[in-house]
Image (cartoon, rainbow over all chains, first blue to last red; front, side, top):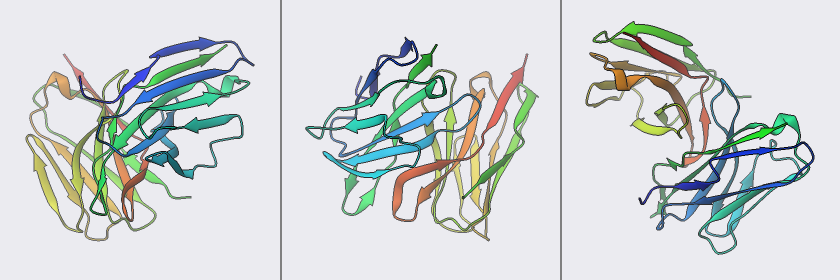
Length: 116
Length: 112
């Protein structure tokens, strides 16, 4: 399968614990995005990378959230001291920037986080 | 902030019926995208629109970019069970597809 993959698919944690999610983009894609989707809403942009550089962060990304893409391939999203309000689906997407044109974003299946 | 309002919020139809949904914005867009999300999965791009007035088809799906650049509609003809899901209109950024902004969604259910 050559699509975007995310791990784990589901995570249940207790409030106050730290969690880390992983995203593996489509191999030739140089852009990687994180979105958060709460129940009944559309996905909301969190942050994106071009290669290993984090180019933009949303106001939604509080200081408890950190994302990395150290080698310009896979990315991790860490949430420290989780709160019940962090419960959501965390979606990763990737795309290719070539010739100044950004192609379609392909989404992974998401990681569903439940904070008890 | 910028809002994308979709209507209807939900639809209950019988298999074989045609479906129409639309999306309006408070500001002008340069790119309209329509995505579909199946339960438990990530969204998948259905149609992309880049010019005001543009009408684009993808199989049984047809979408149009409104002349005012503030609205778009999506039609599905002869619905089938696999059309069930949530349909989102989406704004791309002015430079392309960075930082997508999703609408509120239209949930389509097919009644047996």
